[in-house]
Length: 290
Image 1 (cartoon, rainbow, N blue to C red):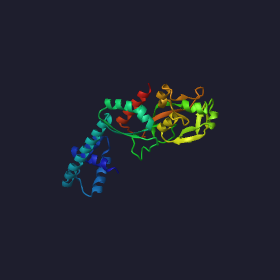
Image 2: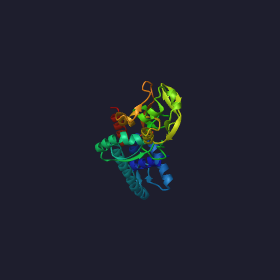
Image 3: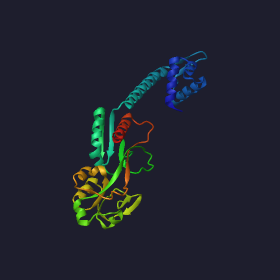
Image 4: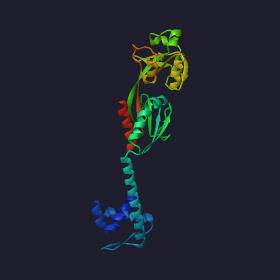
């Protein structure tokens, strides 16, 4: 039997001075209330009420236990009220995990705006290209670019990445311009090791195997190596927009449909998601919608 329920019933009976009156107030049967209070007495090992055919009265132990019970219930109600208030306001701590290049190039600006809008929020930002375990690593929100699997997490889509294929003019001058993905086997390819598999790129829904020349788990490193003329790489188009404008890099396979990768905000599948988590996720989704 639920001890807390029995304590609530005991305090109601004590305040009403009657099992019947308490049962009526709680929309219960008198016998149900009596049984629960009797269970509580048996569980405690002492009598709470003197009972006669006409009235009940608290025992000395019952009076002491009523003081304790009321204090317990009042404290619980206050804590519940405080937590509900906190849940309803955008304040408190958020631990966020995000991929490295995306975090520095595209996430810093909206996060700064979010913090200006909600100054009572504090952030702990973990920058990592490895997929984190939200439960074991106590992460509140993780931003991931991937096709989602059934992980038991909730997800909100933020945007789609258009993957861009590129190389430096110097590399293309030395090695020649590839005109179709089939020719990638004869070129030096710079690949992202966290892609599984890393030696395959997707064009027009067809997978093409590459000649893997250098692998790295750092997107920034891959871009720098491409700028140095070491090979052909594939990264989201926003990562190299400036280098393309400066003509330091050249796009390849423009007539082919490349790979598109969705990015999601993932969070734990709990019954009550704190308002501060929902506020950040909705803010980011709105920001990247434009």
